[in-house]
Length: 302
Image (cartoon, rainbow, N blue to C red; front, side):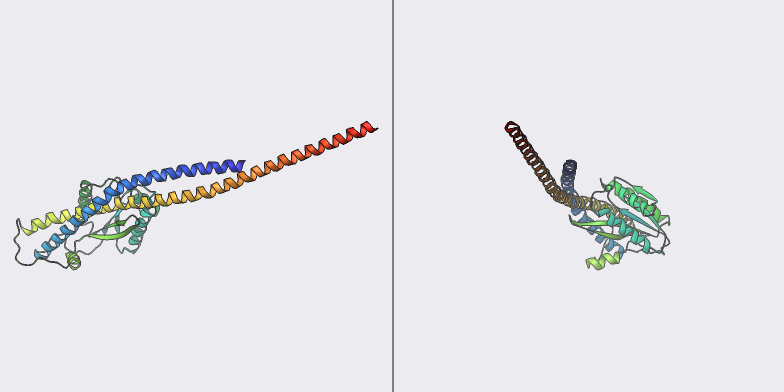
């Protein structure tokens, strides 16, 4: 009976867990659609602003500090993860990639954790971020991206950092998010032009001056890339959580099936044992009755 009681308790507990997983899957599925739309809407703008800026940089004097290469003595690294767990290996893959990046770095690195999971997992791995931000990837906005961009550019302009990189997971599908390292500063327009294979040709008239346009556009470019990292992380989190909760539900159903079979076998064994005891008791009573009857007849004959 104790075994059956424990099995029933475990089945009820797993069923509750399955219901929770189903609820989390439904919530993330609903949020994923909005996050996907925001990511797909942001990507074309990010590509276009990069292309326009690269064209301007190639046609104007490249004396802007964001385009000037400097010898790297210290760099800044922004690591983007989710604020919560229960999304499979999504956060672990990003942090693992960041730790490998840090192990290969030849100069000191100032790590900024964007996401509660980044802060927690990096600290557990022995890396202490210089600062951390929560509720940025869960509820991304351009104002938050602008604040992070200002932090990066301030450190870069005052010379503490000679380079700034981003690490985040680019969203492809529910089952596919690829972690990447993106070099944010200094900006290298040659890479973009090789990839796009397009340049402005002919005479170009600037209004206002090229330096003013480039300064404004470079700042917008940095803000856009950080905003894109926030959106990609949010979409990747919800996609990974949908897949993780779906797998959890499947595992829960399989475990419930196995435990139900064990419960049925235990119940059948208990019923069989009870029947055997009842039959054995009835047979014992029957034999005892026959013996008493035989003894009674023997006494009458005497």
